[in-house]
Image 1 (cartoon, helix red, strand yellow):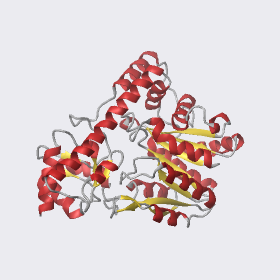
Image 2 (cartoon, rainbow, N blue to C red):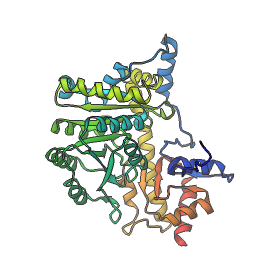
Image 3 (cartoon, rainbow, N blue to C red):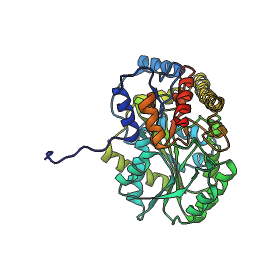
Length: 401
């Protein structure tokens, strides 16, 4: 059965981690995987998460299965976090939430749901996008297309190309949009541009799916959700896939959700029933612990306040590393763009499209033990005060050639 099976190519991100783990050189710098690091280079457990876990440990009385669609309390907490507790779609019962194993699980369930209820829809992905997006929807048997997004010349958004591409979208197609902190570019639309996107999507009859993996990493939880809440005002239907890996640091717990907004409460019930059918065939029901942590924090005023503070600390550290990286390269007369390095500061979230070529990335790994994706995407959250000078020196040497 297995004699003819060949090795599958390694995953671009996790394969990089595996290669780094085999590297015996000291002072390695990992800027590949999208994982937050603190100043010591560790991925911390948030203090508020520890407190929530303590409470759960003391009060938990069962490890029985959750329902197919997961915890109802968690679903409500997620909807209110993303949309705001007073949003009309919540009041009208038009929104339902499926508790999923991570953002990836939420996306996969939505892909299967679209295949089940859609009429041969296509899935439109930004160019570039997260490397796993196309694989997830291909696994659901859906055809993927690309829409214009990133402008390598300006290191910014090519909004005209984006709009031109979306004019090719057909009614019933799904358009995947990054809610904020676009992965891999770090480039986001402005609020006015989001408004225009909503108008175009409504006119084309498309279903927007918002991949909201970095909620809170630009300006804050309410601020980062503003455009999504506005879209929910503009459109009758949309999907929001949430992940709490980054903003809660719950990477290993696989905590995600898919919130579906429909035209009526009756439609919401029907759509939820179909989503549950998809879930039952995949993983039957979701894991409990991480979602219970999130629910405990979001439903307690003091824990919620403390979480917002810890999230702000992470956000501010990343923003500081952006400023320091741009300044450090400039002091070494390295310009990653013809106009300088300020684009690094303007981009949002954990990632920056650096403009480093694949050959330069190879040299950084080979000669300096600096690990970056072949695309040149840098995880800014992996930069610390203790490694930034060595990183800037290494890039300067590679650029000097």
